[in-house]
Image 1 (tube, rainbow, N blue to C red):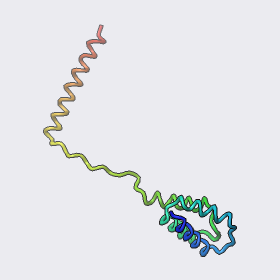
Image 2: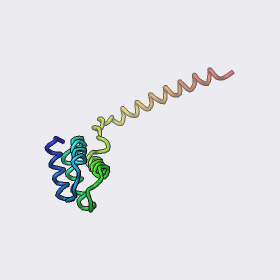
Image 3: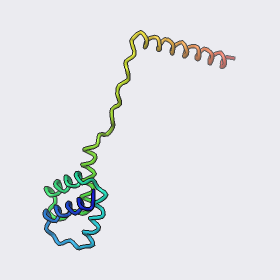
Image 4: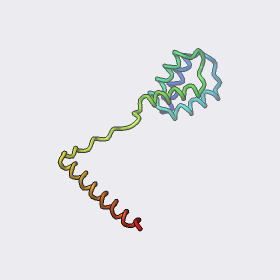
Length: 114
């Protein structure tokens, strides 16, 4: 998020939890907030407003943002399914593989037989 967005987030937090926060602490929060996504942070602040009576610790906000990020990010992307192979062609591939395996198996037996 931008520094202006971080200030907006801090304003929302100071309105939700009207506690005196020192200037060094606000500066630290401002710097750390710029590392996060603005929309996810606002959602996290909104969730914390429902559950926290006091100004949250940085770790609480970060954990909530991370949970929102995980919920919004798919675990994996599905790849497009490959074109289906016709049944006759697939059976041909299977027969070819069986021939190769049986030939390989026969040559292994002749090499190990004494």
